[in-house]
Image 1 (cartoon, rainbow, N blue to C red):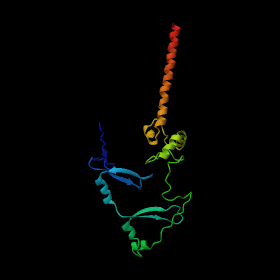
Image 2: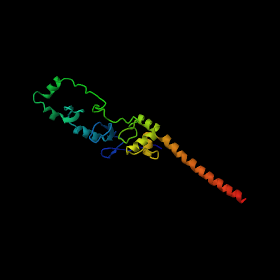
Image 3: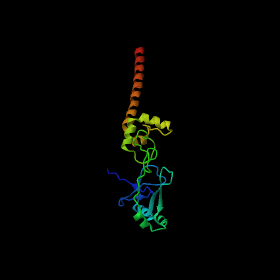
Image 4: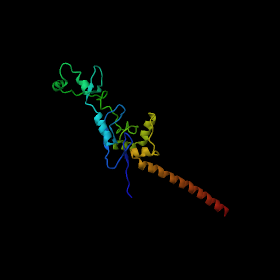
Length: 206
C-alpha cells in the first residue's frame, strides 16, 4: 500500500498540492537567525512575492577608528547612491581601489568567522539551530558523558538517551538501545531470585 506525503508551506501553513512543486527558500542572514543558514518551503506564489518585495541593496562594512570589528550594514542602493555628491556612484565605484583584506587574529576574527563550530569537543552538544553535522554527532557518541558534564556545568540542557529527539539528532540509537537492553536483564535477575526463593520454600515444605 503506497504512502502519500502531504506538504505545507512553512510561511503560511497552506497545503502544497501535488501538481505544484514547493519553492525552496534559503535564509542566509536575518536579525533573528543566530546560526548557519536555514531553509524553508513555501508556495511558488509566496516565493514570487518575496522576489517582488526585494529591493536593490548595497552591503557595506564600516571600519571605524579604534574598532576591532567592522560593522556590516545593508542599505537600499538608491539611498547609498545619494551619498555620493562629488561624482556619480557608478563612476566612484569604477575608479575605487580594490578592498584590502582585513587582518585576522586570534582575538579579533573576521566578521563571518566568529560563529561557533559545533564540530569541536568544546561546543559539541550545545543547543543550536540548523543541521547537526556528522562531526558533531560523532563527538557526542564518543564523548557523551564528558559533553554532558560540560553542559551541566554551563547550565545547559544535557543530552538524554531517553529523549527521542536527542537520540535522532545525534544518532544515538545504538547507545540508547544498549541502555534499554540492560533493563530486561535486571528484571530477569529479579525474577530468577523470586523463582529461586519460591523453589527453596517448596523444598523446605517437602
